[in-house]
Amino acid sequence: MIKKLYRQLTSEKQRIALHYALYKAASIWLKGNRYECCCCGKSARRFLPHGDVIVRKNIKCPHCLSLERTRILCMYIQNEIFPHVTEPLRVLDFAPVKGLKEFLKNAPQVASYIDADINPNVATYQADITQMPYEDNSFDLLLCSHVLYCVPEDRKGMQEIHRVLRPGGRALIVEEIEGETTRDLQHVSPQELREVYKEDTTTCRIYGHDLVDILSEYGLKGQIIPYVKQLPPEFIEKECLTNAFEADIVDCINT
Ligand SMILES: [Zn+2]
Image (cartoon, rainbow, N blue to C red; front, top):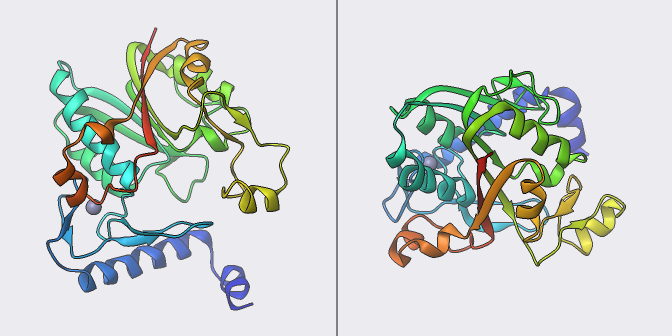
């Protein structure tokens, strides 16, 4: 009842601002050195819990709100993308997260940075991934973390990623990948999604390893990189990544 009233009396923008203010207060309370975040470079004695259907502990950086999948993606960019950059990159970041956004905006390897989302309250620019307002070949690097699984027409999104990236550009797509074959869940009721699949109600599908085949149909030649498995155990512990073994990066070259 109180939650419903709160939602009626406040705009989404106001709720997001309050959310950030509360996290700012939490970051002071959680001051410490036990854990570290590679996105913002700050540390804490504990990270915050995260999750809707299943709440997981010690996941979210209290300073920049990065989740473990964001920190893995940030490490991958630092270690596997930036060392090979010859010309500064034009970057498009879909569904941005504060910590990674600041990291990319300040990186000397980045020439321009655009963050976009279908929800105008969570990104600088509003854009639908299935119908992007950008010219062909506009970007060198496109980030798309946990987006396509909840896009009803995900293949249109892949087509658009191919179109806005230059030939030879990279798309880093982060998804939870389970099994060999992608399971479409668009016919499943919201209740079944939560109770049986432990997914939130926006989930349209759970990708399998065939995601690379699907992407290749749209000119995105990729491979699945379980990057967290390549990181040293002490780093996994320090960055709070022990629950992140399902956040795979699909690293694609646009052909
Ligand atoms: Zn952080």
